[in-house]
Length: 116
Length: 150
Image (tube, rainbow over all chains, first blue to last red):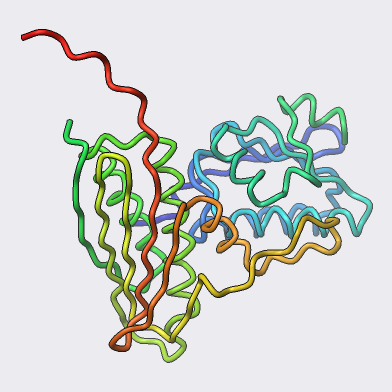
């Protein structure tokens, strides 16, 4: 079984920002794919990233690590990472990890894009 | 719906087995009528522990099996994980750092920090060349509807 298929990533450019939409499960199987896509965007000069979690059902520490790494890389380059539309359970995992203290979680992609 | 259930299974030390792990947890959940939120939390804790075992447990490589026993009682879920990897006591492992600014964040220990917060009890022993980890989680059920006559 191909676990890559357990997460789908779509991306689009919105103004100065790159919007990523995740669907499925972000775990140690699927997080390398997201890490690669985000790294590509950053190496292409993207400094504003929004990740839409609306259709993400599951996240483990492997997924949190990719988010943290991206947040740090963007901050170093005066960029910004914003998250939006998190399901309750995924939000709970963010809160337990303490990530909500430094990563704002916004209600919609439009709210997040406005902050970029 | 039976509020009890028991499941024993083995997984190979291969990250692709995460899919089978979540299927097993969901199967027990259906059998024992465990609330979805509890199942997600258990799934995440077992994901983190399993990922740790296969990442650090077998530096010599080769194929190994990790054994899971899951038992659902009406109010509690008990899980035992056994592996033959290098000795590792997740209970003795230092708690994750207190909240701190983004620049000082490290990622080490994050998985175990989640496990400690998601499970109610965790105990470890090393016996007969195996790591044996026992976890307990309360099952919060909504009150059952009043019994109907007949």
